[in-house]
Length: 113
Image (cartoon, rainbow, N blue to C red; front, side, top):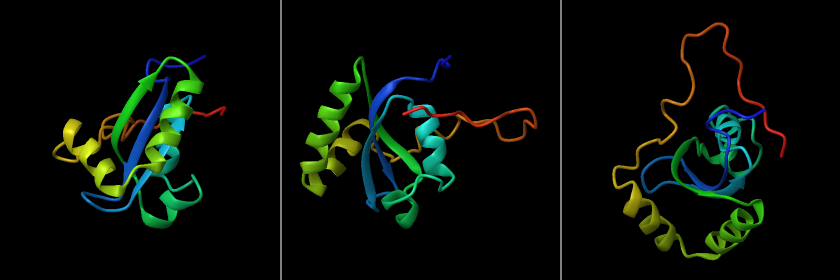
């Protein structure tokens, strides 16, 4: 059973403004971002501190999200930065308020994909 934040998306994580960027996709963006933020998603994002969600695009189908992810991964870095700047010029962490801070009963979201 999903939450209101469970949805299929292509997304970009960053280490900070104009820093390292990572393009990915998930069928549960809320759970995937939690993994990135806590360094439990191995690879590029953990190695380079990409823990800020700076851009995402919701999709109806996983195949659409995968197709978009593959396209974006082929883009030049400048194009990716321009995409982020277009929708998020301040490079805000779009998931900054997604997770409770001081709730002892809260459990992190699980991801099945």
